[in-house]
Image (cartoon, rainbow, N blue to C red):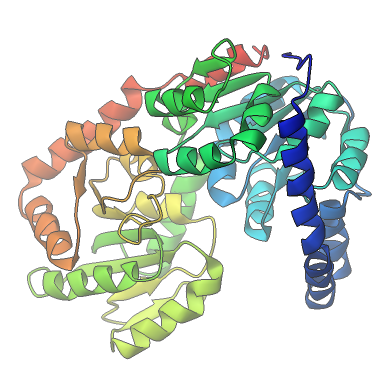
Length: 432
């Protein structure tokens, strides 16, 4: 692993100032824990103590510690974890997340095969106890979760630390550049950076990453595998909500304002396609009630997925359940991928592509620019800006079966041609 023979005075000063800012937040963090203690049961509250460095969970020492920010990163890492589970004993993989929804997805995907912890706050005194408890052979950090003290503490404890599926947009690079005293020493403490694309490689190099530890591995999202569970879940939902003969548009991972765009497009399309159904899947569960109120205001016939009764002449299905979006894409005729009109960088367009579903997105795609551009150039994805664009492109695909089939084939072809990131990542990690 790379060793820093001499820590720069500026770098250490920057890290101490950064730690001081965290210290100022400590009262708020403690109040947040007390809030969770009163809101949730004692088991959840105790697990949340890992944010302060404490955990009573049984962990097999000498395994792999993988950190994923939230749901999206957990899902992206699924196949990598499945590969690691082949060689690691049960309980030897620890997955940390920042969010409760991330925790729920870890449990849903891996059950008791892995151990879940919340990532400790970025204080050295919170991180060291968990490093001592886990004693990881390697620490893997996904995408851009670069916490200065986490990387510093693992480096001090001689734990090889890798950034996997590393992402660095121009916007993020500019922010890191402003904090160069802090970010450059951080990058130099990494044993390896597995970058998603050439944009990311260039931006990491510009930030001072060591080119001997920087490898273009491509995006692990291309290696997604559709499971039998996805199809089984889709079949149950299709039966419950009578979807078999419906024309379906799934608007997935939507943010504020995007539901209204999809609803307006639906109103335009429903005049021409009376059998049309819109399925709305908000990105965050705290917005379920908000979207419910929007649908009430719009006076649409809708039901929530959690409701037991089916409604006749259903126009909109509001999905108030996490973990079913991939299955829903398998039922779609067309998919809109959210976070792209709402300027959040866009979410995973490869999931609908894997089911051969034509894709609509806004032009905010900085989270996965190469994926989106590749799908667009192949003809699997169309960029839109508003509800008129949304409805017009849907009309093209719904009226022209040949055009829709071309989009279907293009998406499947892009995925097939770009697989292999997991193998390359495992090679960098020396875990093949």
